[in-house]
Image (cartoon, rainbow, N blue to C red; front, side, top):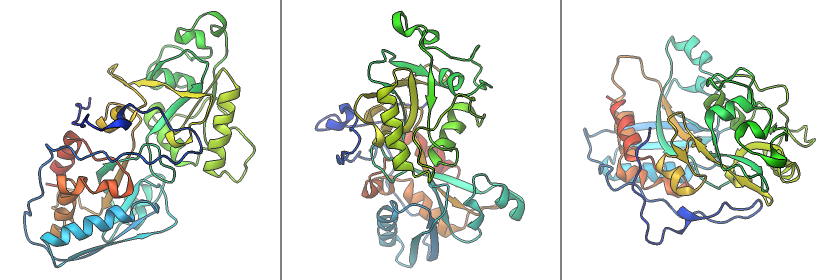
Length: 341
């Protein structure tokens, strides 16, 4: 369970904001790095060059800011980044021997090198921005009185296998405690196409990679499977179908739809607001990762280790706002720093 992180209250309006309606372009406030994060102190002086590759077009400003700030400590070091048509979108490869990380699983990498790729969380996803790796919301019709769902209940809605151990498949809203006209109303689960990164992440975290139930539907008729169009169709369906439930990035929320709070396996409830997402309390947050080629049991290349150490410091985390991402909690950053040893 994640500990609460420091977030200032003075002037921090978005910590209590309502979700941004579909089609608006409100600019999220920057979340400051936790002051308990350690300032960067070079372990060794390093020099050299390393190239990074990403499938996103929304990390370049952050990565270049990291490079510029790191060079102030290590003038002979240089890191570059290139955006390519690759996926999964939350992955950034750094250094040589990382080309095979851009697959849905790590099998191609393991087949080539004989071990798993080494990855480090470098920041949290964004909140309400399109074209960013973002936290995932669970949405229902605005008239639906449901307020909170557990991950086990979500699993029982979306998958027949119920790998989280819920005792029965959830087919009606009455099974979730609603009464009156809602008691016998069927639950209609919706989402995105199975190849979408949001779908992959939702299945992995909520359903432990189980298949969707046969009643799962992708709304609309966009066979080109363009995520923005599917997101719009999803919100329109949720607004018109009282029994519907769906998942999507928060940036897609539209009128007539509301996000619900989610409880993790320990019963800790995270509200669908920026404060709980940034603190790690909300359970469907996403992360960005840097992947490097590290032989198990062997030390990291000193240049890469120093750069990653910098990113995980207060100096590095204060720069993730350059691309409107959220900084890691102090607890998460400490756990990642320990893995560099």
